[in-house]
Amino acid sequence: MLKVGLTGGIGAGKSEVSRLLVEHGAVLIDADRIAREVVAPGTPGLAAVVEAFGDDVLAADGSLDRPKLGAIVFADPERLAVLNSIVHPLVGARSRELEEAAAADAVVVHDVPLLTENGLAPLYDLVIVVDAGPATQLDRLVRLRGMTEEDARARMAAQATREQRRAIADIVIDNDVPLEELRRRVKDVWEELVRRAAPRPE
Image (cartoon, rainbow, N blue to C red; front, side, top):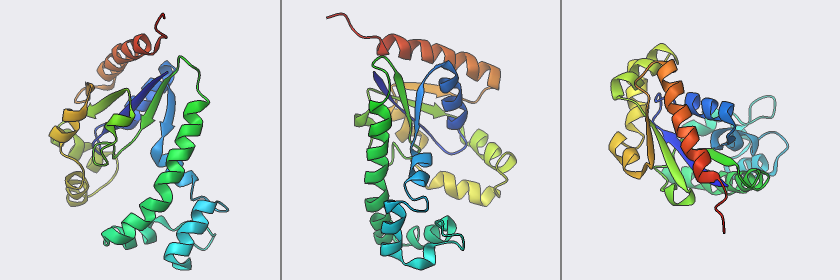
């Protein structure tokens, strides 16, 4: 098994790269999706969040009101640390379960937005960084995600720098390119990953 950490700045196209890797046969473990699953209604995770933050963080239907919780924790590093202490172990445990269920020769891709920021590179056999220039990121966030330019710049500034991400990368996929070119690049990377995942003869 080859454990791959996949990351990239907001608007760099990481989701597209993970989708293409799955098309080739990668097992995808998406940290963001798991983070939502572990605090779904009826889970111990949601109960722990409500115990820590009160019923105010629940929406009318009993689900987690993410914008409300976000407003609380992003303004207060101590509250954010409390939330992370609840959610991160649950995400880690679920990720390990999914990884253990994969085949022995699988390429397991962990899609981790804050891999660089949280110093997680040592957890993986190899780190892939999806990279795009700031102008490309900004254009995608405004044009495709409907953000204001000010909001997009703030989100970009809150993340690790491009240089910090590239410094931990074993493979960089440059995504300042049209989709067809990206497909070719991902295919080349996939062939390299399969080669590395193959069991070595004893």
